[in-house]
Length: 456
Image (cartoon, rainbow, N blue to C red; front, side):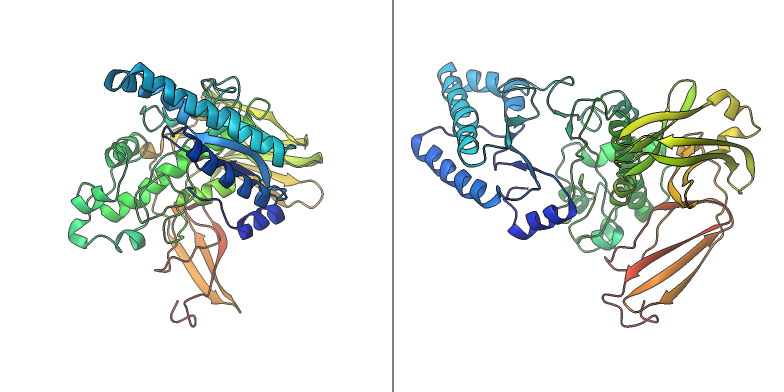
């Protein structure tokens, strides 16, 4: 954020079919309204609109981030009135209107009239407060409000343009700014690399809701990433399941401007966190998604494709050693470009099995045309901290290819959230994944920085 990106960025978005919500460079502050400032803004806006308007990836222009929300609902306006005067309130309000309701929309109308202009995010209309029923919303009761991740399933706006949760970067990043004696989330160094006023303690509080207390500092960093990925997955899938109501899910944030604990899914050095892999999975064109309601587990299939797809849905109830206790099969046609519930299982039926909470549901969608697996998702019948996980008994083999290494991984028992590291910031094709009992998986990593198999 904070810059109009390079031409190369927008060209890549054009090529890849990525839509860009393009902010003007205003956020979380009130701005001047004098003639010189407005003229400066006008010229900057004209230059960038003319530069970017021919890129098909530009979805809309947004005037600012969170200014009207803060002015009306965060106490800014009454604070200015109390500490300065009502006259200053009027001056700032007029400056806001002149900039975001007159100047910028006029620039768009003149230089890019085919595109929409949205004055402030979040908002429900020109100068109006955010609403869950109109416009876009920023939902931060998860994190700032300490509400559970499960609230993402019910707090569904028309377009979710901001939500998220923090995690720490991997140890390979932390060791670049902290010494071993500082490996404590409440050490001065770790606190200085945390810019949220409630940051580290909030990560810890949420973690202990869903996970057991990690045994050491490195494990804490790792579990913080699993926690973030868990929350982001719930949010993305809830928004996508409700696509008839909500047609946008933008989590905050992709990357970092320095090495730090933050809401990012990719750290400062380009290392993918667990949440980046989870987002990749959750944004598949075809996705099985489970909805956990009071009495049932509902299975949705979400399709962003433009063709109906004859498929088979296979659901297995298995224990952590790979024993399949029960199975369900259903032939269906996945409807194009929609989200639909196709199957449901009673929770009581599942938990009636002996040791039912130490089981999982594996849902697979396969193509009737060629039998290939299109999507797979897992659902655990108990909170992660209550699972009695066996020792996985993992084995692996690495093979050298022309420009990458292949890592073959197999396990005898369930291996939950397998993390593979080569001691570098290189990203594997998949990571932090669950490997089912008596199965194998092949992942790859580029050879950059490694001369040969021995050095890897």
